[in-house]
Image (tube, rainbow, N blue to C red; front, side):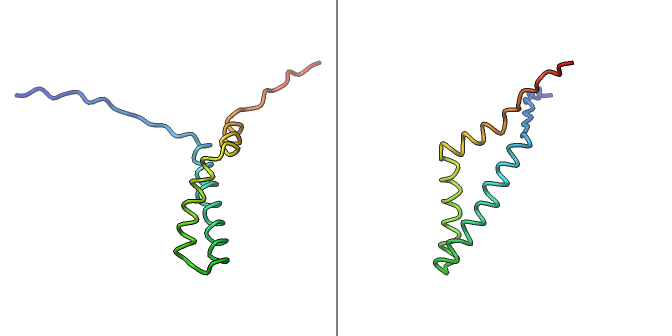
Length: 82
């Protein structure tokens, strides 16, 4: 009998805030950009391409990164004084 090799088990977790950011940025902003471009140009193809490129550009803007970083920081609770 040959020996079976042990394969490591990889477990990946995804934070709920990451899923929320993906939902807001990709779905809502992407849909908005799509309809805006489609309204202006009356082209489904340009709307689709613009939507994909628009969300990718938004992900690379430093201000958007700063907002995403601030969402993950929880505020410090003040101690109750009696």
